[in-house]
Length: 200
Image (cartoon, rainbow, N blue to C red):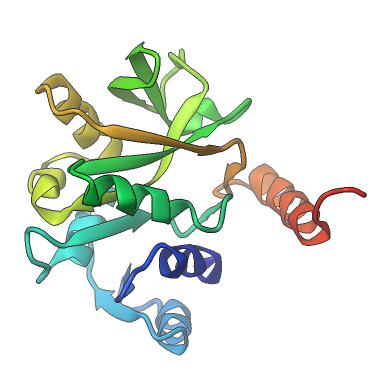
């Protein structure tokens, strides 16, 4: 799973990849080092604190790529369009995926007009759309308050309510969180399908 995400970050132009993990996770540390990633040892209390640990030492104008190590998604070059959006002037660009299930386990996007994000609901009981964010690129300066929120999606929602415009880039309908046994089985099916390629 880590290889899958790192491959996408490198395709997006990442010059350095950081893997945040706990000191006792020796298997994660050894594998990350074998992939030439920088290992950041931390004990974050929240998901957002994990991302903040990975941002330490970066310059405010640097572009950071955020990703979840337990997800499968397409396309492989998805980060490239997010980085392009940031380089054109957006402070934060979110990679959006259209799902037909697992919305209650995701950060679901709400729109106030076609294409314009007006909020993000974290794990909503009643999803406002079928679109979630699953990866992101952002100027480091735009993530200054991230650590105050438990979830990155909650921070992005707060920015929306403060009038910050988030760029959303619709990437695909292939995105899977493998955090449950059922999702892991589906991930194996998706992975096998992607290896086979399109039917002829």
